[in-house]
Image (tube, rainbow, N blue to C red; front, side, top):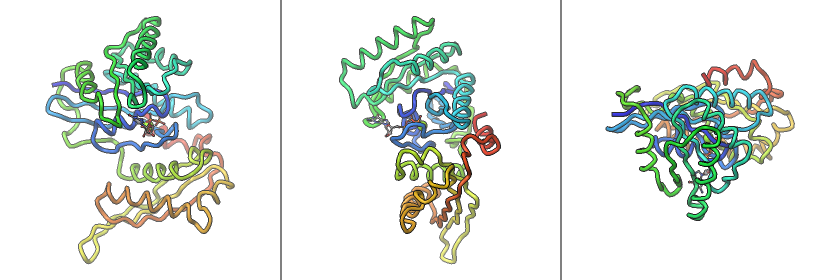
Length: 304
Ligand SMILES: Nc1nc2c(ncn2[C@@H]2O[C@H](COP(=O)(O)OP(=O)(O)OP(=O)(O)O)[C@@H](O)[C@H]2O)c(=O)[nH]1
Ligand SMILES: [Mg+2]
């Protein structure tokens, strides 16, 4: 029986959250085609008869441009320091061994932990390219005094290589009993999942500039049972943006954009809670909240 913690790190958009969701079998993290989707460390727990793997999904490594980014990167540092093994996930379709990737490898070699190189999105590339990536990355990590315990090409989309990956993770973990209850899946609360599902839809429907400057706060979340014995949640949430010029765009002409975000988010929340949901959204401006320490205190609590 194996059990332990595995941090999943890599550049933004490599597919870290997609991989964790898939291996856990539940959407603990939101996924979008835009980089810097994940903002704080998220536990995703996979329990089987042979092992319990506790994944720590982390924000994509980037050079911070504001205090929010600094908190996110601090989270990655904490994650790699506190696990039994590290998965370094590379986007196989964008494998260039640039400064960012080198810096990630330097950081993980320093931890002296077991590192697995996982190359994702192999559905998009040719076999010979996989071999070239492996060779190049291997050469670099050896040159800085490290090594990869295993190298696993995967495609989360095609579910390729995932069983091999689980075996390699199990090999890298210590012997041990379950650390969490068998039915525990994540440390993200229902309220936080609601916030993230709303953010996911905002990221999906809004253009480039705005979504990254958004933060969602659930103000109220109460359940009740109707006369017909139906479970209903009344949820009220604020979409917080950093500039007043963004507010109108988020609301849209005749409130259309806000309605679109709300309807799509409500559907996902209903599925997650297995209940009917009344979702009310408001848009608020909090000037440059992503550079404001007192606002970001909530992120500080989440990364520890
Ligand atoms: N073609 C292909 N696309 C994938 C695969 N896995 C994930 N993606 C896509 O890659 C994009 C990024 O996925 P995420 O899981 O959000 O990536 P992430 O590494 O968590 O990104 P950040 O949270 O921003 O660091 C999404 O559009 C996914 O649908 C895969 O196996 N093949
Ligand atoms: Mg992510």
